[in-house]
Image (cartoon, rainbow, N blue to C red; front, top):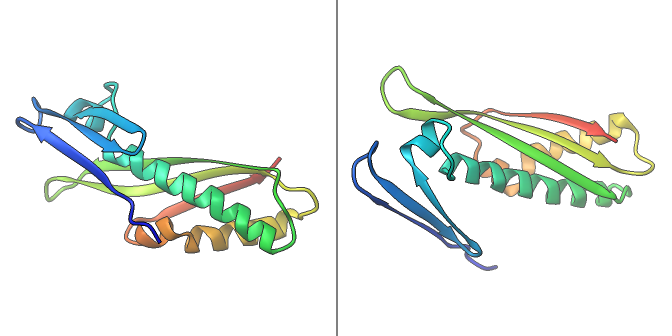
Length: 140
């Protein structure tokens, strides 16, 4: 299996500095304000959200197909919450997944069971076990 590579650099102090995050096909700036405020740019938490949303969507399609229900479409949004901590610093405190799927022939109960299992077992979810992950899954 391939090893995936990403890199980042940072110039300057925490609040006044800036950097770039790079991976295949992606090269974006990031700053304190794009991470902890609302300034344009990317941030590590956004990339974690993209990773888990992509992993979950693909894994859910596989799990549904394995149960005999090939999906037409799976869409997932991930909201990654980062908060200051009382002891100092910041921490990712929650990841909320919101997925919708078009899956002919599956009942909502079966869909919910499969989606819950996928949330626990996709590779990125496993890597992020230290963070509470919630799931809202809807059939459309």
